[in-house]
Image 1 (cartoon, helix red, strand yellow):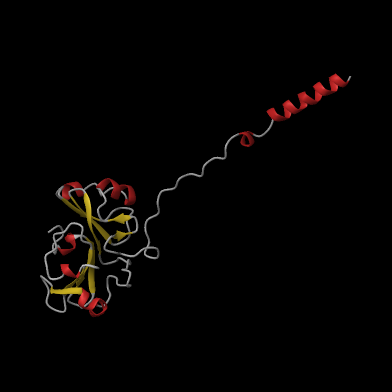
Image 2: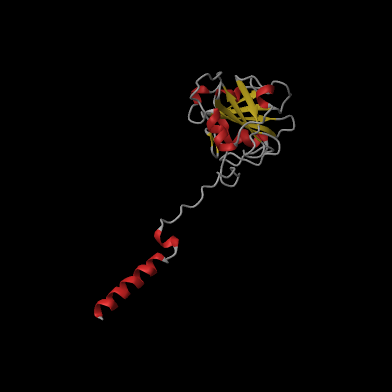
Amino acid sequence: MIRNAVLSSVALLALAACNAPETSRTPEAEPPVSAPAAPTAAADVLAPQGYGPLRIGMTQAEVDAAVGSPPANVADAEPAECRQYQPPRGPKGVLVMLEKGVLTRLTAIKGSDVKTENGIGVGSDGEQVKTLYGSAAEVTPHKYQDAPAAYVTVWPGRRDLLNTHVMDAAARGLRFEIGQDGKVAFIHAGGPSIQYVEGCS
């Protein structure tokens, strides 16, 4: 009798184990991996090294992974040596420039709300920019517009680069393009290509 009771108990335990919920016997499922969010002005600043997930020196593949592939017409519209475009998942009003497949410059344009670490953005007062950077900046006349239009260029930590045409690919800086209305029209961030005045040249 005792033997039958023991066997019955064992059978009941085995049956309970077989009917246990599947989740109790499997490892906890990993949470789904979500796509990286587009950078926002509240979380990032435009700096000589980049903005958000965009870092100067990235390859085309890395830029594509971070902010999406370039528009379909870019390959036809721009030569392979240099491309400038608005990436589909990039910050609003920020253009990327890639030269020979490497990210060399970011440009904040009209409609952009990104700002530098010092709070300068498109539409800021040009005189404020000059005062802010003082002797650490190089101020040069605008190529196509009369004063107060100008270029204000800074190479943080590298005053030796002021008043020269910078060729050092490792250099990182900011150039504020002031329009004839005295306001910041564009902000370029990155390497020597921030010195270009006509797109890729």
